[in-house]
Image (cartoon, rainbow, N blue to C red; front, side, top):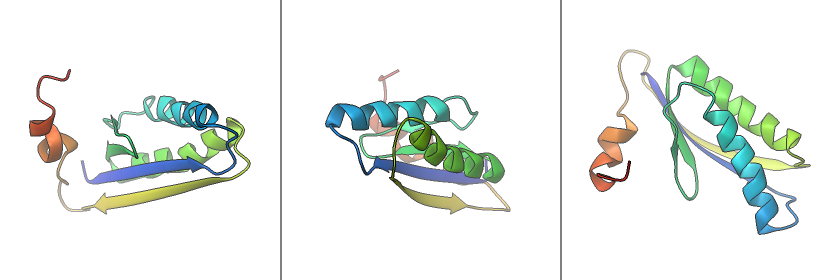
Length: 102
């Protein structure tokens, strides 16, 4: 695993909190179709995997939000890329804080 990405999708024209949640849920459902070990948090979803797959997922997030009815979507990403080695996994970073949750 050479890449990890934190993705935050913000529907800019949602009519309500429920509409925002609906769009974000659609994006998360799409992310879960990929082999990227998604970790859903309250503000962003972290994924990890090979660089090309992570970039494909990042691109798809915006398209899914638009397909869900967003006329404007802001997507923020933090990308950690290490072409000659492995990046720290989500488990290594935060696993100790979430023991027994699964």
